[in-house]
Image (cartoon, rainbow, N blue to C red):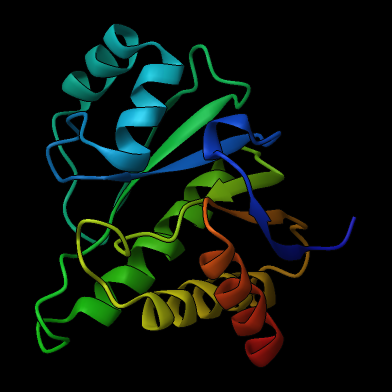
Length: 173
């Protein structure tokens, strides 16, 4: 198997992957959007209890829980930054959220991972910049871990996001 990065227009909870990534908040509480959908699909109470036991996660970091009722074996909860204009270490924190997610996936033997475009929803990160950082972080992980093949899929809901992701992959890879 060779490592790959692709974009699919689908609901992240429907992905066939070893692990999916939740765009989490630092308290690991259920939210709206991707986070809320993952909590509902995984089994709200079970995932809430697992997250409560962990207690929290700083911005730029990631933690892992079982996938419970999902197709995925695990859920990685990655905390991306809120966009404050770009001068508050947002790029570094977003890159770190992807990097830490990929490291956790590798530590847990996951060969396929599904990502949302972290921080590009209610956290307000500009979509083009969010895609650039996401693809660069994934490319760097693959380059730094040549003996660990992994299939990376970005699950998006809109044509616009899919096309922007595909364009960014072509530009960066």
